[in-house]
Image (cartoon, rainbow, N blue to C red; front, side, top):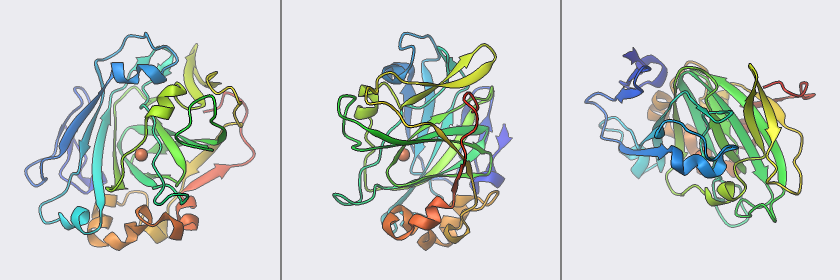
Length: 280
Ligand SMILES: [Fe+2]
């Protein structure tokens, strides 16, 4: 078992061979869910591909004894997810992808903050004109790819739906803090067969290809790097569970994104100009 307590701030152990995870006795029992391959088929380039029955595990609402107020008072939920390493057709393992609803009608959408605990995550962020619209009406306004290593944080800014991809040959473990007051929206992503770009293996290389289910066309893919967000308490190597436990007020950006736009975007450094096609 690999000890993830230093990187996560919680007594977490993980077995990369089996994807088994242990949270020890100090953590309150998390709600547990799985995502099966069959549920992912609608967003895949090759919906009929073979693969593992369970592609990822989601452990929701983890907290140490005594930290119940983080949810009950501050409306903040901490989750851990475990993703296998596998190929789904030509695509490395990816999540179904979802959008968050706006905080109020016409307002900014809820953001989310991820932390890589083991492995490496490649995030695809997509902004659309209407997150409820299907392929006949949707207009994609921006797509950003960002690779994030263990200990680093990945900001999902308001208005950007997100897909997580595991391109390594080891599993990916990551955590998130998010406002507990909303449900994510998956249906429009499934109707469009995923986000605008698919990452596929071509020979030995990975390359981004356009998803043809967006007939209105796509903007060029942009690439970003994760950066520290010191005003939000988000620094590489500092577990964000521990930071939130000590200073939950720093995570108010998850509930009131309208007040923190500049601080959140410091975490997503878009590289300009875009690198050559095929770079990921
Ligand atoms: Fe999310």
